[in-house]
Image 1: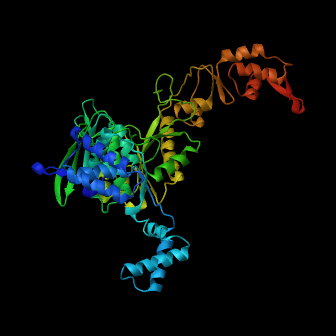
Image 2: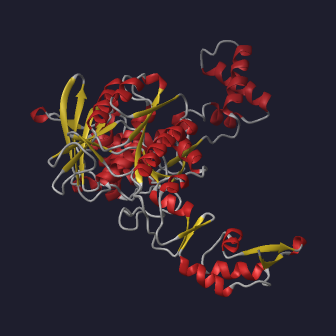
Length: 529
């Protein structure tokens, strides 16, 4: 960004039009770069004098100042003095007090001479050190610009647009990669909503190919108080917008109490060799902390970051997380509700409501009220917002937090969903089941069906026999009876059982009419009962 006094805009036609630099301004950009390069080793006031002269020659002095402001960030200034300036000044003031008020050159010389004597230095060193640490006397020791004239013009245009947008109350963005932009907005901690145009409304994510999504971001000027963090994040957003293939932006600007519209596109702003917002970060410490702690638990729920958008009336929303219920035995997201009898993953969306403005909270509540009836939504609400009961009235589950989201509260809410799923699955169990596998553990089958193992007690298995905690086809039992015989060592018998996928050796051997004669800790021998 540039400083506000560097802003160049036109208000022609009632709009708000940043005055971007063009190809014709590259020679001026090159001259400004040359001024910095030519003053390495000189004091800042000499550099400032040279830039002032260039401003007088240029058609627009603000453009020179804007280029210089960007290049100064690439410059290194240092205090160079034979003696520490602060110490020299202290001694000089003490010496001046001793010789009397400095009213002319003679008394000043006596004070400087006394200072030099006390410091054991010559008068010239005292003179050079006295005010060497003032900004104007600092020395330009290094200048290594990242940009040539063309890149400097690009950077200037980007910075000019960022400065103009700092007075925005609302920004509306259309992009060829909306989900990427939403991720950037969330990670930058900005307030936003997604408006949908065309396509259906209500229900889950049901956008049609022709549907357009408009990302609406709350500008810094709309907040109760502007914060440096929000403004900086807002400025960084333009980098991510300009890095997408196709985009357009319109903004409502508060121009000293008058609303004006600003429009930007790829022809105005590009990003010179700058990476967009990094991927791995979270939009708030609350979310990052929660994700880290939840990931350390061994649950049947898989945590997903920023799932697909949900339709919410004329808007869309991308929840912060989603939880997919994947009991043991379900390893992917495919639909297993076929002849196999396995259950499809069940999804709960999870939104964290932290520090938001009242207007943004109102919009979010409207979104929550218009998501489809088939959407399961869990909302973590900061106690300070006081809207937990309103969200529950919209038939969504709520957990409250202060400072950080308690993982236990979220797990308890997920357990309630889990219990409901297990009960529903148990009620829908048929009276008979015919698993495809020759041997299958009851726990595995229960997980595939999304029920507890106890729920299978009322089910019959006409093609299998229950043996301990497993179902085994009679043909497999016949084969085992042929291969296992009295006198075999237990380890040899277990090897045979493993070959058929049978884990419960004790129950299976008992079913075949054998028991184990134990021989201390060294093992045992299979013998007839």
